[in-house]
Length: 141
Image 1 (cartoon, rainbow, N blue to C red):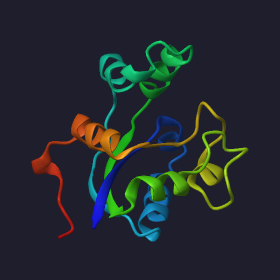
Image 2: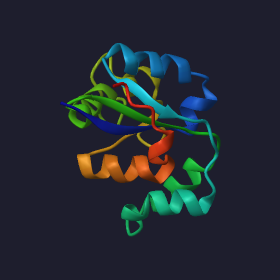
Image 3: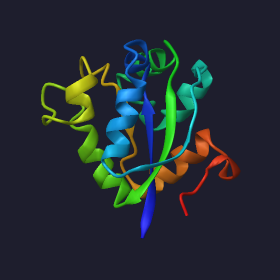
Image 4: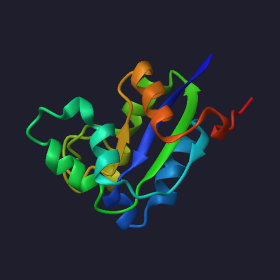
């Protein structure tokens, strides 16, 4: 049975104009795109989305970065979606990411790492709901 995961193409990758290449990499890996949009986060939205990191030292920097330009949130579907997507995007630090991963190909630093991916089924569900209504998600069935 397929399940869902969530991605955000981050402002650094949008600035580099690699949205198409990233989505192509994702679909070539067997993921189906259920919903996506290009948008700009407000500081309030970014703060709410990253609330889990509020006490971490990088929180303010992360919120500022995520508001620094447009982003592309994407709802995805595939069997074993969360684990497979985490493998596809690679390590947070692109210098440590495996060849062929999205971060190895498109990220420039640990802070500007091109893409976000959900780390659990529960977070995927919550993160998708943060950006998309259920009626805006077009299932592949």
